[in-house]
Image 1 (cartoon, rainbow, N blue to C red):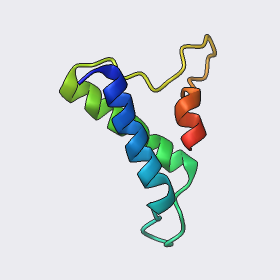
Image 2 (cartoon, helix red, strand yellow):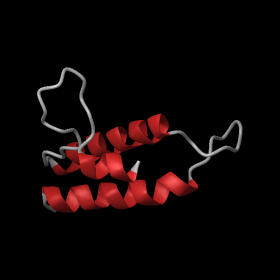
Image 3 (tube, rainbow, N blue to C red):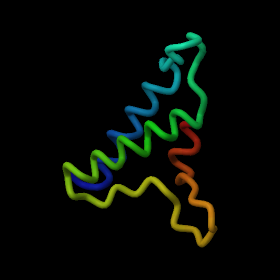
Length: 75
């Protein structure tokens, strides 16, 4: 697996999860913050098991880390 493959797996996961995930307490759709946390956890897991640099955050010099435009558009 290469880094682009890992990013594609994450994108597919997020694309599936975004419209189908529900809050277990209210039954409402989950918020973008929750999906962002799921994405970060999935990226950390992929990085751990594949030893690939799975980069979902933009490399801007901003003090606040932001998702790459690719993943931000999905959210």
